Length: 148
Image (cartoon, rainbow, N blue to C red; front, side):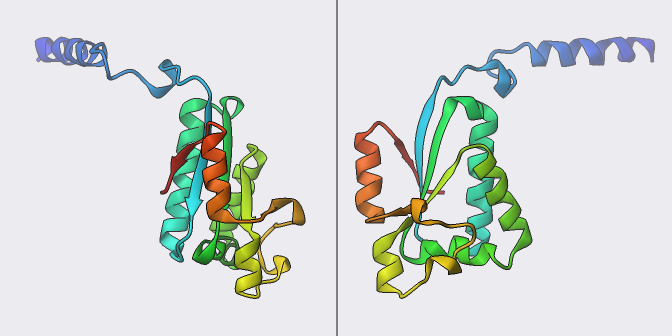
């Protein structure tokens, strides 16, 4: 029985010392510029996307990140849903405190007759002329593309 008590900690130490099993904080990802693309109407996916963004920040560090969430078409539902979904609203507020920018397509606002006031915590500063054009432009500025 005493031998077993000694073997388990030794085995655990050996497994944890294997390369590739290091904690995320032990890896230097450098700096990131990322555009997250949201153009779907799915509350579950919205929650997943906000979790993905937070996980990305946790791995790289908010001080090493420039993140923009570009919403167009059905994606404006993200901020509309946040008006009534407290959990989603909290995640958005938390991400904004970490300098994540949420950008709204003017074409969609106009085409769907959506007032900016209908979108949670959105202002004129958040409005971009075209969601798809802006994503392409950001990629030319060195942002990587992610569609959660």
